[in-house]
Length: 176
Image (cartoon, rainbow, N blue to C red; front, side, top):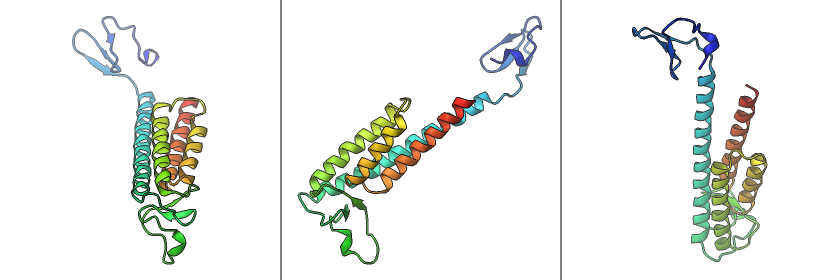
């Protein structure tokens, strides 16, 4: 692979894809370290970790949608509400309980269904279309839609952070 880094004018030496030069007598020499494999491995590890973060964000968003659906046709009593109980957060004075969420839709059943739809679209967009040109902008829009439709605050935050990490690693590795 790195033909310029090792003299190949030795008779009988053959190179393999494992960065080794082997001659027929069994001698083996490892090529000098260039770091390209390590950089690619780090990028793959970071991408896998961000996909796991996005899957966790989708799980949390799905749980928000599930709890909102279990409340049925109920008015949350305001824009900010608890996804588990369905009560308005304005009634709590000692902090937010459980799963706080924000929704512009006045019905918790419809809110939950919309959250599950946006959550699924967000997960599919993150994993399947990760190499698209406008990937980050659409991910940001889907995360904001998830937030204002009752998906909670942490799932969109995790999705945005995972998108930022992937975008940064893409830019770093495009320059290398």
